[in-house]
Image (cartoon, rainbow, N blue to C red; front, side, top):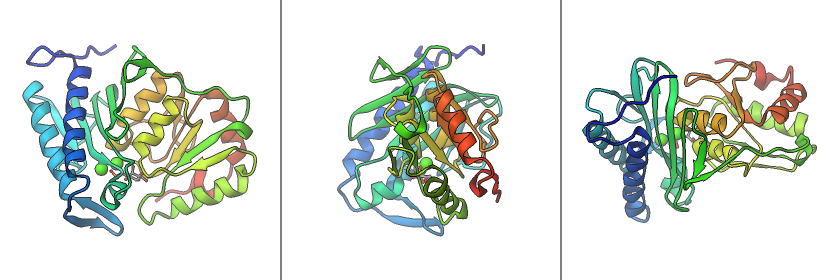
Length: 274
Ligand code: IPD
Ligand code: CA
Ligand code: CA
């Protein structure tokens, strides 16, 4: 297993990730009720000045601990590969639309990968002061307490999480798929507007399955490891193990994942590309 290096100042990588996420949380909360500058990255894809400020602060914190590692961030270096050498991967605010509209459901993601394998992943929700964290091979934790994916007998008992991306036609297919092939043989569905929290909630056993397409490495870096370390499985829509660059993710415990794949086989969402 790849060794997780100690930082220049002698901290473990998970402590550094935690420190960075807590720092992000302070800035986000300080600015939450204040006026934010909003600009557009694409249709419906907004960014605030706080996203950029948080990323800059987190980057300088990480660089002070690990000066030689790549820093991949949604706002300033989205095109840098996250699967080459060591790379810190940062989503300063996951749930920007919630943040900008005043909905207190958002988080910060900080992860460390080596050659595409996630070694450390942290997702911090400052509104609930909940820090989800995992180190490869060491389990998944919520505020220091071990977490596990749920174990339900069947999909009928499951809460399914999903989100809408940005005008993505596959989001429409996802809604149709849940409505036509799963509903009403499920408990309910939740769309919280933060894919990072959506995945963390599966790891914590709060929801039973999360599905989404179009996620980027910073959206899923923590979730991939959290779900795996919490005893679950994350795959792409074909059922192959998910990676940082998988286009589409299904995260759940093994049995429910299998049932979901059977129930949704052949649906357009499972097959659509582009
Ligand atoms: C978004 C959120 C949202 C998901 C989008 C993501 P952002 O991240 O995770 O839930 O539906 O696909 O891009 O833009 O708020 O960091
Ligand atoms: Ca995101
Ligand atoms: Ca973001």
